[in-house]
Image 1: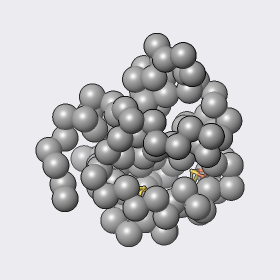
Image 2: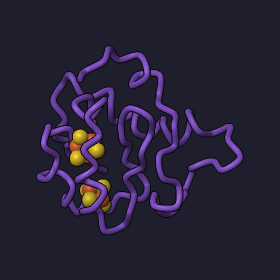
Image 3: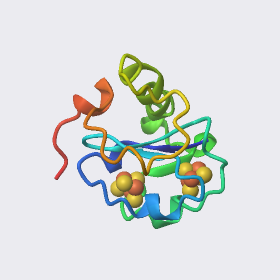
Length: 112
Ligand code: F3S
Ligand code: F3S
């Protein structure tokens, strides 16, 4: 899977969303998250991010490695108790901005 890492926080440019052919990039409150089971590794999102927040999982810089698990946690932990859990939502468009973040993202100091 591809992963959205720390540079996205508070930037949320959203250029990546328009590129994704399977609509698997979901918007939280301060960052976006790629659903690891829905991403087909096409890589179209990676070059369009103006702050280079997106990496293939094997290419994550060391300091961003926690975001591999964190992108998954957004779906399987943060949102797991909701009425509309996002275990396998099958497309971000119908959700819009979800208004929640993982603890890792939520606790990050403001970046912009
Ligand atoms: Fe974030 Fe970059 Fe997408 S800033 S919303 S990962 S284009
Ligand atoms: Fe979509 Fe990027 Fe994966 S464009 S399919 S999230 S590599």
